[in-house]
Amino acid sequence: MRLDTPAILATIAILLLILAGLIALQFRLSRAHDRWPGLVLPAISLLFAIFAAAGPAITLDASGGPWPAITATVATFLIFNIPAAAFAGIYLHQRERLNVRHELDRMRAQDL
Image (tube, rainbow, N blue to C red; front, side, top):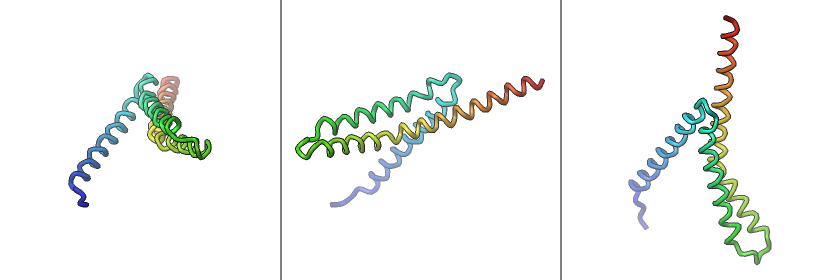
């Protein structure tokens, strides 16, 4: 079997560009004056993780007991929840920076 290295590299490059675009979008949405736009990508990622975890919960055979199905469901949820955690971390960090900047502006206004 022969691997098509240029096609694989092109696919990886495209996926990295999409990932960079989503991260940049999350930074931009998190810096918005209103807090709700910054929660869009974490919510979408969380919903995607829930739907992805529902697959193993529904399709796995329970002949080996409930633990394989539970383990597969939890593992799938945790793995698919990594982007939601990253987007939420970006959101919380940017909102904290925005709040600190707002407090500094308020203190400067009071000093005048």
